[in-house]
Length: 154
Image (tube, rainbow, N blue to C red; front, side):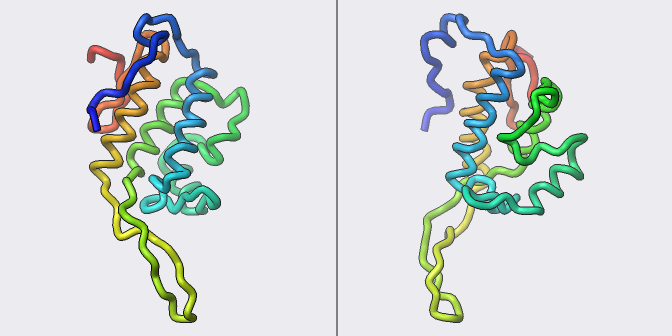
């Protein structure tokens, strides 16, 4: 995979600038895209069908506001500092799942799970994709390898 995300016409030509509400809409789709591929399963227990209490609890302990369920924020909660904290929190808890395999349980039930998780690969993909969104927020931002959101050029 390339290190850079493809920027489409309106982004390349700086014709699109997201405000906080627009960034929130993008963040919702971004979160669902990674959630549905189990990128938050290992560290937060989040899957397509399940929002683990440990995810809610960890976010509530770490942040100044509850981010979950992420796709149901009230309009008054959509603010830059909350969006940036949610992105940084998710970045800290992402990992790319490995291959699916079958597990035979003690009752003869076959379950499917991953053979492991790759945190560096998950971080790289998350950062690359998120930077494709952050470039259009106000004057442009960037998610660093350490997980901090900074203005572009810093």
